[in-house]
Image (cartoon, rainbow, N blue to C red; front, side, top):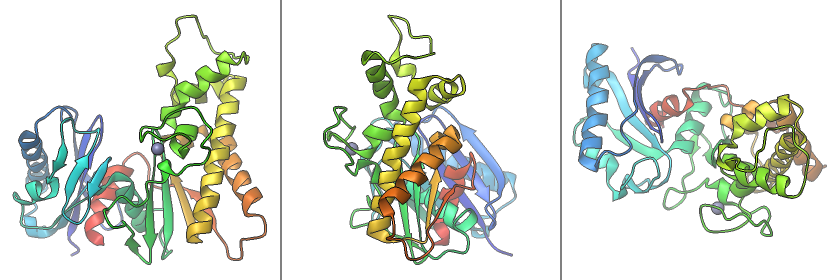
Length: 319
Ligand SMILES: [Zn+2]
């Protein structure tokens, strides 16, 4: 019998732990919500306890499990498993998270960026099945990517490869990205930019069907707000979806020129914007790529749903 996979997804609101089979199905799952403010040692204790609880509940010994994969947003150094910075765990800086968890287990523990984890899950269990290489993009509050070349994740020297959200697509944009630069793809086309983009269009005097009062709190503008606006026929919401799709399309074109991949998979919350968004991304991509595509390039939406983070983390030991 194949050994079970174990994944831990360290999110900004929830900490998910799951046992996963070799087809990417969740066997059992445990979620807690109070992990963000925990000091380092208590966090490590909690993660280890969650894993051991799932093992016990499912009558698994450690040797029945292939390994423990953990995914977390932020910058981490893959080779020594050090969390450099992350906004998902307050106060964590240069913390050897992988080894701290490893000290409680005999089976291997792997810590990677959440986009890499999701990419590898998609590669093994989702839209990437049957391919040898692919690029995965996750588009939600931020934009991240995972690069898979010949069945392996490409991580770069530090482990930060695939920070695709910080590639610059328009240096003349006025919104500052979280990295301190202007014109990053992230500051033109994802969740974190939406309040700014919406406010800007209101200030330009564009018409809206949304209820925007004098004291409207623009931080409430998120992907869901824009989707609701679009469904109501709000012209600003539609414009933002199309603008975002344009910048994403440019991004895909840049990926195509650098990697010439057979497959690009798009995941993340903003894909719920639907066909108009996806079509604008593809249309822009093909307008730029014109006659430079000589082999098929598939651009598809992620096949792993809401549990992509923890399923992806669980896939890491397969590498
Ligand atoms: Zn940036």
